[in-house]
Image (tube, rainbow, N blue to C red; front, side, top):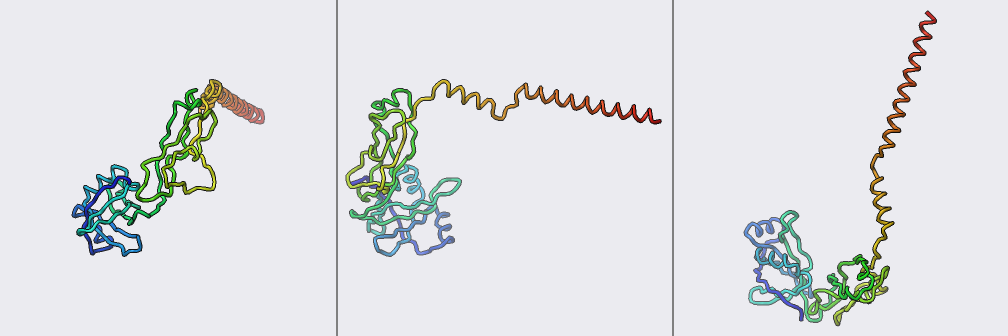
Length: 240
């Protein structure tokens, strides 16, 4: 079974924004427990305790046992509302789970066997398309991560879902195709790098010759305008 963390809660009667604000002012966090075809229960959690668990980054993938008035509720966090500035927990939704509960959840990807990838050894780079993959798994057996092997991957190869080592009892939600998780990019040639550098230099930069041509054109226009004025003056003098 996956690791389990524990919390203590107390029941709360008040609901709504006003009651929630009052709970937060008292140093606690409002939460709700729902699911398993039972009535939802509104509870209060200690703010310091829940923020410690939230900052560990495991709440969405680790089962929790909430002790409430002498009864244990096995749950999984499904939604956490955090403060937009302080990033502290403001509210938590917990789903009741059992040993038979199956749940769709995003699991982080870890890549292995980089040293066995000819493409990476030959100065290629790993272009990650998916940092996590949504899996269907039992709540009692949620993996912390899935391993994806890069062994044998050459320049231009795609790393597919079939390259992942999935724990028993799990399967990807996307099951109609072998989708790409990453690709192996070949190193850029010297010519390509020089071309990019030249493009960056030209983009948005006024060249000296362009400036010179512009100045010469302005000067020529100025001289033409002056010549027209002189001719006009002479014509007016002769008419007088």
